Image (tube, rainbow, N blue to C red; front, side, top):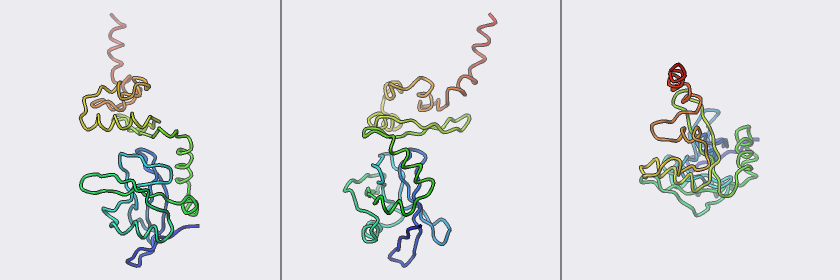
Length: 197
């Protein structure tokens, strides 16, 4: 069963719950007559709670939150996150509404959310050599510290993620961004040369 959102313009859009690969948070895609229309939500650094997402008021307009509440999709949490000049409101979607729109991606999202602790979130890093994605469960304070590190804070990566192995931290380290396998392959000739001497 699909659930539709009626905009004030008269458009009727199909709601499709999914997730953002970067941090496995809830994403809501919209479709019009089977064609992609856009995203209702946006992926921000601050990971919202279960069945919550930041509404993309920049592209959907600020009145979309009123429409969501009027249509019975859920309610505002009161939490907001600023990115650039835009302040995005967090919205808590009703579990029953999302269940009506259930698909494989939403089920995957729910499974991931059930394994997270209260003080944890997901972070995904991509290897710049093999292009594989690696997902990690980290403490929220570590994720925040990592975002500060990305913005130029003078942290050492081992202090950001003290419980990760060196290989895992290599995916997040500035200038490295590669998995342990690719790192070993890239520098294996040093080991080979040392063994011959």
